[in-house]
Image (tube, rainbow, N blue to C red; front, side, top):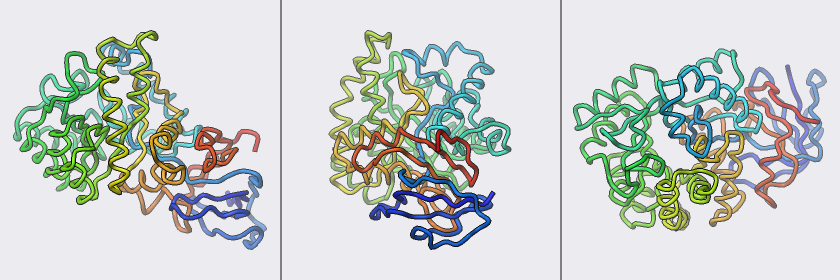
Length: 397
């Protein structure tokens, strides 16, 4: 259908000043026109009355584990749950994210390449969910972080082969775990796992195929090596206050996806059943993570929002909480909105299509109750989600 959305306020995702009393016309999945109230004369359009609401671009979550269950110990379930059960959960999680205003996600590690099947089912209209930029299983070294569901490879030759296999399987992005991580037992997050020549082999193969590389990196050496090898984003990066890493991050234009709330939720989860080893590692990471995030902001680095949904107590459909953590640790609300819209879309290679409310772009729009510039948590009050010009959720609007 042809729609005319009448917004009380429009925050377009570009970082520009909000506009009051704005109409947005869209049809055939695309935004056709944006104008001041009642300046767009189109009697064929169905009116969506959002006179006292705020309209924004659909949110982009750049770091998601779509089939994880966000339990106190998701690692246990990943290792023991049958793939069909995980697929069912992935379908439910995708629906929840879309209804919460997340219209695009990047999945960075999913057992059995299940996210590729979810992506294709959503594209075909079989199931509701955000459009997915999928990494499939992702790559690690033997015994590295997440080895129980990732592809294990050692040395440049094996890394090159593993990258080519993932490209053949149809992934949209390559994910590597350069260092250890919080939730993997007996693996320390502050220790590098990949050698520089291994990272370079992956980046070379991925870039030849036109794919970006996301690097899980949680120590200075891992961050520096990943950026030196030419990765496109640093995931977590809680040692970003190291000068060499910051300089490379800014100079290369790579993105930081800090996933701030993931560490916080794990660190507070001992009494709720999070494994003690994971709690201790998360507590040790918290200070470095927030300090590194603030250093990256001060340096003017590119930052995109990623919730790490699927980790402990990190439910799908609540990505807006990551924006709240970003504001808590030094971002302005407007900058957090840009990180969760335009920047995320650009990182995913979709900046020409989504991420901002502009004529010609795909009509991914959300309507929220409240002013997110005054209270960023208002991003959680989604009353309408529009994806590709289709109203997929409307609650009282």
